[in-house]
Length: 273
Image (cartoon, rainbow, N blue to C red; front, side):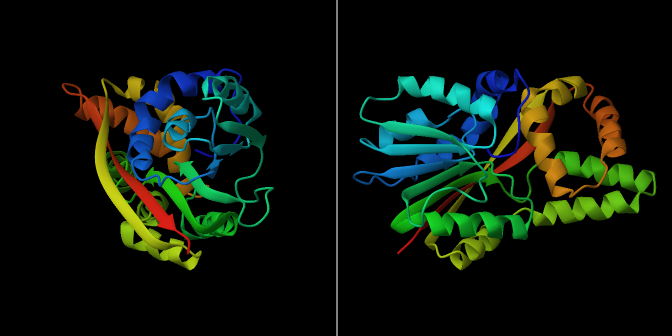
């Protein structure tokens, strides 16, 4: 998970609430695909508070891990957690830009990222090109990210708002945002263009539920991941009115049941030869 700075308490909130409820949905699937390698060196891009570095260490013994993230507060917590790693695992946590990683070409046997902020083809191309530079021959890239079809219920409410309020800009931006998410075919093509082979994409459907609109909008998962992810895909379009409509509609339509939001989890593995 990559994007920028976190507030003073956000790192602890992310670790306590967001990792077990949301990021673990992606991590559990991705970790099943990690390939063992003697003397592995893994880049954890957008490592935030360090999940799933303990799980990686259990699968890659005697490994060197490098966690890179632009948020110093998150890295402070990641460094504290790293003390629980096996003594045979070396880990460094570095403040840095995920699109310009300060390591030499082919420095890593593995690269891992969960929920990277790549809204659209151009951002994915840049990130995949950087990972293609960093991963050595015979190495592996592992990604866990929301795929096309994710957050569909919220997007449908945006479309309803646009229809009722003659907001053509929101309607167009919503359709564009939905299509900008990758499907298995598009992400395979993009990774192959970046130099990866044997790209495999596993798709798992999951859902999250909330009792009310207030629960949804105040949930750290929504505040720290889902809404920033959505807003990034809308590329600067003002969603204030659409989100206000969604808040009211959730309580109206789901007054007697939980509001459920679909997440289409993509587990992506690619090799370099």
